[in-house]
Image 1 (cartoon, rainbow, N blue to C red):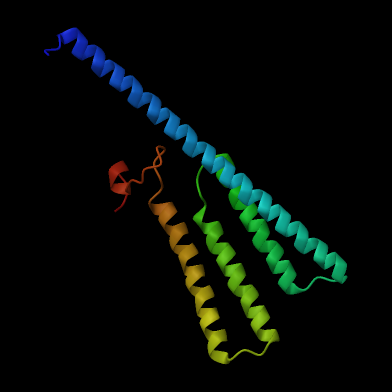
Image 2 (tube, rainbow, N blue to C red):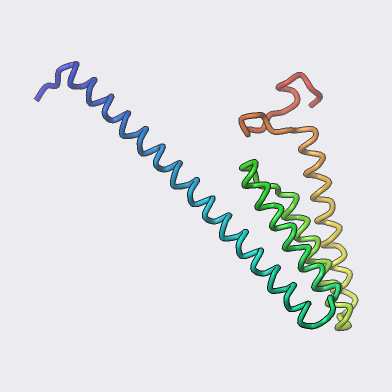
Length: 161
């Protein structure tokens, strides 16, 4: 059966409409999943921080381990809040959480008399994470993201390469 030009054109237009609808529906579902996931992470972080705080109150004192754990919760909460506001994941905050977690491990290790090699390796891990933050800061200064979110190089805007 031979299609007329108008029937073929109508079919192409209908297919384009379906594709556009599916594309928008997919974007809506992905955005909804992100928001639901972020809300779950944020709520879990608040719940865990509250539980930690209540256990400190029940003990009658706060140890450095407890305070570092609360700081980790604070960083995770700040990261979720920044993502809600800007729709960008601040990777530096994840590294800060890593540095705090390794520092917390060092504090726990010193109270339990761990071998010196483990202490040295955890110190090296903190140094590597700190250098990663420096590299990210350097990279974001010299290679900023374009307004569209796609990276560009300074040579593209007349800067140094």
